[in-house]
Amino acid sequence: MTKRNKIIYWITTVWLSLGMLSTGIVQLLKTKEEVALFTQLGYPVYFLTLLGIWKILGVIAVLIPKFTLLKEWAYAGFFFAMSGAVFSHISVADHSFSAYFGPMLLLVLTVLSWYFRPEERKIVSTNL
Image 1 (cartoon, one colour):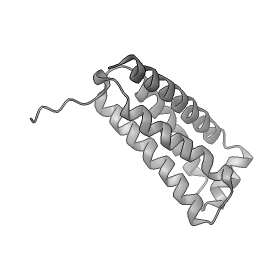
Image 2 (cartoon, rainbow, N blue to C red):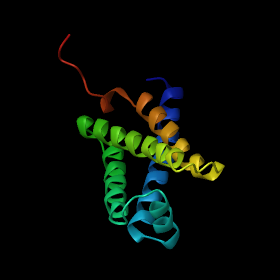
Image 3 (cartoon, rainbow, N blue to C red):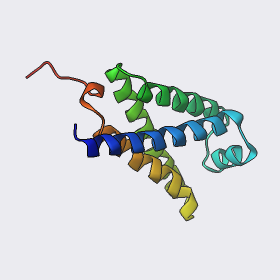
Image 4 (cartoon, rainbow, N blue to C red):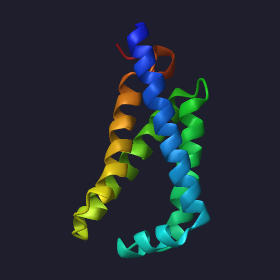
């Protein structure tokens, strides 16, 4: 892995982790704004707890060494959660820039962090 790729990986991974951790905590706290947003999107309030816990566990999985399969699942979960957030805003005709900025940023950071991850954080295929 080149030094450039390692720098890109760690910058995107740290920002992704901070974003997922902070939104996960906000969801677990069930702030008024977050409850209102989820209600507007048509989701039940208990979904905040589920997403918050999954995001925090996903951050732990992405940051700890080894457990490559778990990391793949965490990245997939981040991708599904953020693409689902974008689609949810589209489906309720929420056209504000701020509604899309956060989920799109985290979606891009997820893809970049996954793409630039070091070899030791990738699943090695034994079927050649």
